[in-house]
Image 1 (spheres, rainbow, N blue to C red):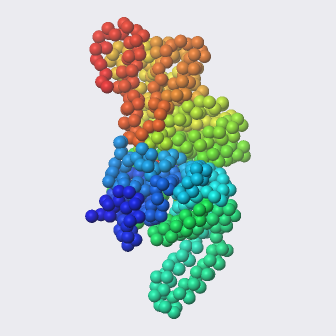
Image 2: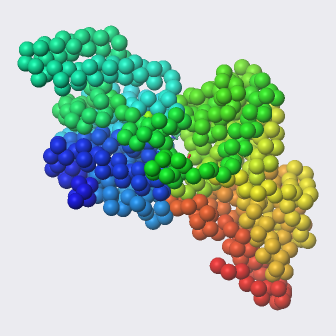
Image 3: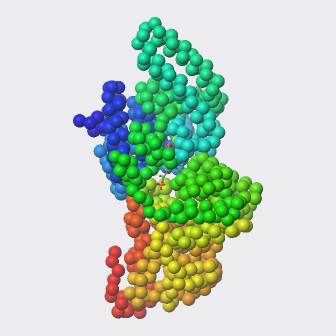
Length: 637
Ligand SMILES: Cc1ncc(C[n+]2csc(CCOP(=O)(O)OP(=O)(O)O)c2C)c(N)n1
Ligand SMILES: CC(=O)[C@@H](O)[C@H](O)COP(=O)(O)O
Ligand SMILES: [Mg+2]
């Protein structure tokens, strides 16, 4: 029987003989590769923390001790060791295991937020609470990657943690030298100089294992080397960086040597105060296609062939179109520069970086800093484009509002993964941006409906010189292009009707709106479909168009509260246009993981549902339509 099948609880991990642990680690890796090959998911980060997670569960008594995973994308092994290995095949599938820790799944899961760099703050608060409640025999352990450690919040937390010598708190720095790409910056440089001393760890290991058996030669050589190592380490390494902060430092430890990690964690726990345990791991460890994958060590592959590591071909995506257009813009304007928060490849900026290596800045996982640094670049006469996932914009809202917009600076923010992303669950849906951006004075916001419009709107955005601009688009393949049949002010008319319903289609919702319009037509309801292109500020032409219709329906892939629908209703109210407005968007709640299309469907954002709801709204207002012969053709649910 496989050892993993016997693990129903961390207690079972603690009961295992040390000699069985390599087999357990191998079984975990096997399940990781075979499952993620089918479901997609965060493979590289999890392959790297197998021994570390086994050691954590052998040393600490979860859930009495609290183990927190920063970002949470590396918690798959933790899931397996806390009784969920049997369900692992359901990972990221609707109704199955979440790709992140989930309180609903297990008492062993504490934090669900997969926005990076938060775990140390949670840990600080949890440890303070334990201390105040007199439960100091319990320990809080926060596992944070070298990438997440580049985020400002992590340093705010460390500053607080270091000020409290009594906190039963261990920070495990899982240092694999990479975020997606190699981690950048001064901190990464410090950590890598620590990693260099690993050469000495390996030398020690060799001596211990080989010469140690020769009674008279082994031990003295070992001791000499050990002494030499200590001396060199003191000179070479910036463990002082943590120690100067007042934090005890243990490491660096070979993170794939389970016994060494266990020993370090036990030492750290015995200290009963804040301790940093610095563990060196390799992203993708044990699966060569991941280990040797230059771009991101299989950070989060789509389904792939487990034998070869070959991923399925990816369709041409919104990200690709943005990347191509940036290269073009870079050629046209030498002042255009790009900023990424540790996501050069995922945001499509890699080609720009290749073409103009000195015009792209990776700032680490530091969206707040990215935004204000962009403000500085703009003040310095450059034309910055900040590319982030829509959900991570939330981090940088104040910076966008005060540091960029208040100063009327020409910074363009490009939001990939806007709308529903689905598989990554509640924290990753980009459903907040069009609400929070509505309140920023002087900001222009564009939502392209297809690749062609993305190209046009990005160029228009970069041409805006007197304030910030934002272009947002969803995850995945670019849809078939939809040509306009006319123009109303700045808006594209996608279908001309004769006065019943004005459908305002925001960005990629155009396709569903056109489908709805066709279904409505079959029921004797004529719909005009417009794409406003710019959803902030809204075009005054919309007021004229709305007043020529009996009902306005706004359809957006953003939370319903405070989005474009509300903005259109306000625009019409302010213009004393009394036409009723119906708004269709993502329900304003945290959505469980499922496929994007499924979530859009259950949110009613498809042609069928839109047509049905609009028909009902129209019928309530014009009973005469009820008797129209075409109304006998019902839409299905
Ligand atoms: C605020 C925020 N920005 C960006 C991301 C996207 N992201 C997810 S994992 C990751 C890299 C994490 O690197 P690290 O913490 O070193 O973990 P590793 O994957 O190397 O184990 C990034 C940038 C995020 N989750 N949160
Ligand atoms: C953990 C995290 O934030 C990212 O790794 C994210 O899960 C990637 O999402 P995509 O797969 O959409 O690039
Ligand atoms: Mg890392």
